[in-house]
Length: 269
Image (cartoon, rainbow, N blue to C red):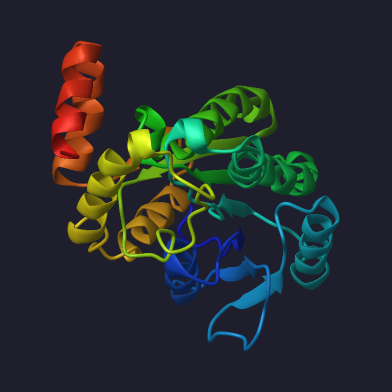
């Protein structure tokens, strides 16, 4: 059964904006003790605290976790939300850019887990929520490395879920669709786009910029995270998406690959 009266100490990476900020606001309003993270911390928000942490730097991660532990004594829930977008033809993405996005979206989450899991295992209680993406289910044209990084995080979480089950630590992934955040403006991009891809690339980016992809309130994801925290044994993959975005996951499973990819290409013109 759920434990609604238990006030949890929650660490949310990437808590200064977007989905992470929405999660911090909702959970703190519900009475939990919430620590968000950001690379740079300025004025403190109301209701929760921001801690300086760069998830690409192991020492920074450990300092941030130690700061939370010194103040709160424990971490009950970690939400690995911090992430990095990337766009461009796969052929044009340099190995350095590819490693940057994997270092943040996959290895960054791993660094945080390495810092918080010893305490969770010792207490035989804990919840790890990895914020992945619907893009983990398929390769998005001109965002292939983003899809790859989120798919890798899904497989990491799947293995982690089985490894941590004997210790009473639950692992869940949440796959959001497109929400109103700043991830699009901060995406990594190749220095140049090859002429062979330029026309198609511009069309796809135009579809993304002009659509309703980013119109939904990120608090929808926060509501889902809150619900998972109230469950005694949250499990598996959870979806936070609507309409054609949510339908696309089902179609990917049901349709022949060629037909699904043809539909994807038609969607992006």
